[in-house]
Length: 475
Image (cartoon, rainbow, N blue to C red):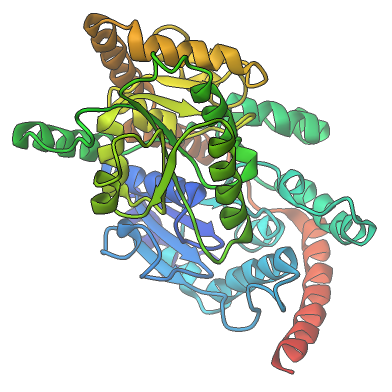
């Protein structure tokens, strides 16, 4: 209701816009990196006030900006529903935690005090109807990828049945967003095919993720001045950076490398680095499978976890596995590489190719998914059919033995230019600012009585389920 305090808030907001972010779990991952970059970009480049609400943020396991005061991060909605129940019902718990968060910041008056101009919500759309009904403010929903396509175990009847209401809820609730953004043209196509009715009603905006170009270039310049920052100066390094998961198809890099004639492979090494967690069975099993694959192809391999042990492996090692690579080591690997071999097919976007191009490293990637929008064929790298290993081998051989220094310099220059002109934090912040500005012009008064009735009924069901879960969880 309009009052004196409300008028003061509106007068203040003429000078500064307030954007509230809602994210389920602000840990370390691609989605979290995008959220942090978006928030920092809007703050630094457009002067917005940004507040991030999340149900979980561990200071020991989050990005620096989320814990060093750069961003205003507030943990809410985490006191009733656990993240999972005996390792199951993760999606149900995530939805209930989001609804709890929204209700908590509304009923406590915290949201009213902030008086946001708009919301940025990502990953989970379930709470959008409630958020719209309570506030009537513009909502931007960022869809990284349809959750219904990410859920595993659908071959089981009980899992398919369990997922039916959540899959339907995902599409329905997303329709309450004033604008929907996706991370690539590839994802836009997937969303359009998955939910054609939604795509007809809502314009899907492509907002590419970004990388921190300023910080990376400052570190690179410092290393060049110090003459440091490279590994294995006597080796021609081909680099693969991915999590140790089967869907990343890292075996393609090993098979292609093995296909290079031994005399052309002399002095070369394939380094396979990436996320690895002993608690994740797939990481452990897939690493073992890759080691066995290298052995079966006659390639000598070794596995290390630190820079010291990596530098001390025997010179005759063909394939080096580096587990759980921290950012500092990843940057050194990129500066040491002749080529980034990026093997995933149908990747939603793929941030690693951008990191490689900014470091002046050409990229060999699959000719599908997100890399087709970042890598320019023959200019910043090469796009090849993942089912044709020989074509990957040919590119590797060419980079190792036939590229001239001038060609390498040109590729490095064009890769850096492409990232700086299209995928820097400035570009993403500008894109988001345009969307928020446009939504502000067409902001509506609310969601209407029908939505209110639906949300109230939904809240009653959710409350009952939450109560049952709370009892079960405490038994």
